[in-house]
Length: 112
Length: 117
Image (cartoon, rainbow over all chains, first blue to last red; front, side, top):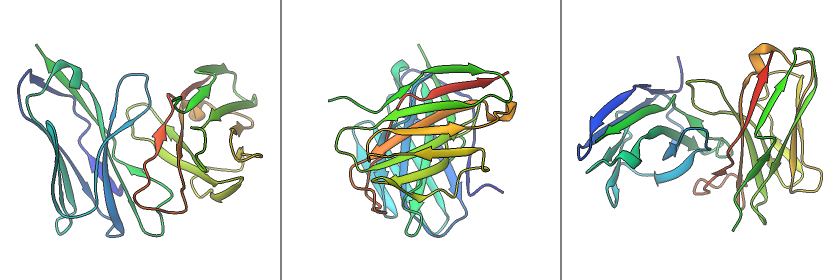
């Protein structure tokens, strides 16, 4: 069983929709949670990070962490075609803070 | 400023050959990381350098894989006796301090696409 599970999709939504992306994890040592966006043939770029349970908002993006359930989410409001990409959740914890553990990535397509 | 750069962007080789992949981190970043991303998967950690030394090489799959960072800047990932299963995108990332800081952001390069025939 992988430490981080993420539905690979693909997920197709119309422009303007609210998108919900999720990951579950099994390692209680994970304390720092990130969402990366990866366009085709590009490297991942950091979208958001958080290290506590609760919500964190940045523009159209909201990251949510529930440590008790070992569940994290990324919500995208008013989705745009330019949001079409693969979204990767990533985590790290004390003792393993040098390395990120990624989910499989969810491929998102926002259609006109 | 310039981001992380990787060369070559694509590499095609034959089974059994030796390859070298290069990473130029962001100037001033002391920490450097290598990851491997297979098709349809997320990146998997290979090795982490703090300065010139490999602080964590627990992700290297076997002894055919080796990486160096002799002057604490550019790094080279070396793969001996390549196998078809080594085909993947090899990503490099760098961060300012490393040292296990949770808050450190890792900045990724575009990757080198390795295809072993």
